[in-house]
Image (cartoon, rainbow over all chains, first blue to last red; front, side):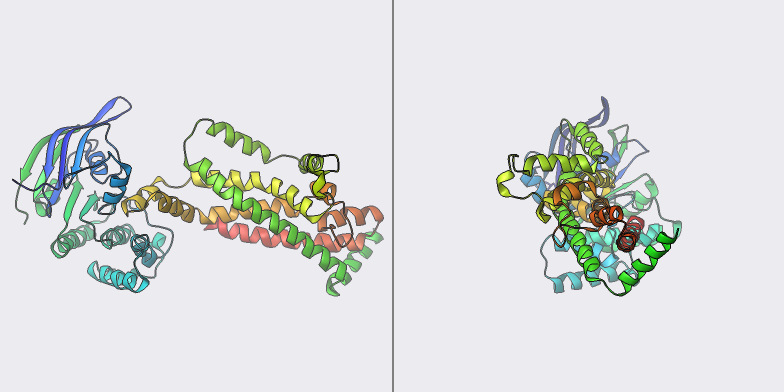
Length: 226
Length: 228
């Protein structure tokens, strides 16, 4: 039997009487890049908010590694430490890049020397060492996106959810960001959910593509990226 | 017009010679207002955070209540506290009337609505992404609240400074609750009121200049944090 990272059953999300999401069944395997595609308003961000444990669905069941989520606040809080998300317009705390990166480690009580070591490693990995002492609010869109990615990766998540991670960066940055994702995926051996409206990007990077239209899965494909 | 000019001359002399009474009154004023601001912040900031960050029935009425208190006349607050701590009042046995403690209580009550109301507004205007970001990085409820407070830190400092500004310059409750006793409860504002009525313009102007200087620096700090 295939091992599932996420298992979703009869999932639905309703906002103001309108059905935003309706997924009878869907499974995702671990250590793969899963693209969630679809036009604007197709429910892909809502779906990823649910997978990121940020939004309790109106109805349905979600399991993470066999554990039912959203049933018990304690379990959800515990699992949230393993799943992280980088939003389309990431919010950076009003401090330096270094302190932004340190946040996730601090709340996990990592010793200071370990924080420093990990910050250096992530800054190197994403090629943003020169931004270390800069104030986060002064960064460009592309730089902010990379800092947000570094801040998410530093906590060594099992799952990384990226919501339209190249939507607000200029074309030069798209390639850099895609390469960074590929590099991170290979080096960290994690599961990545890639929310994108760009189907070519999904085909370039992902192992599976789930296509949503009006909150329903209209296509699911397994492929080899390349 | 001569008396104004003479008053200024005398005030400059008092300030340059670091007149002991002027300095004493200034320090007492600062001490009372700083203690009152600190106590009001310890209650007003967490209270404002809870009201601003959480949803509960009657929230809107509570916010309106605090906004109404913003313009509460200082003499009414003085009267209210006076009624409680005067000899016939329920807390009369504590012997607080005409003491610096009574003045701190009055100023504390004046500062709380400002600090609370400005904290509520700061927390309500915070970007929702702060909460989501903290959650996605694995923060629990308390850590998320700390992240929100940390992001509003400049607005909170501005709220505390606004509270201090209101009470350092108020005279109504200070005179009613402190009694303007020399070397004991005489503050900058109560001394100005007294010295002016006595015709001691030099002394009053010297204290007035100090109060303006304090206000100037406080506003400078306030502006600095507002711009952050």
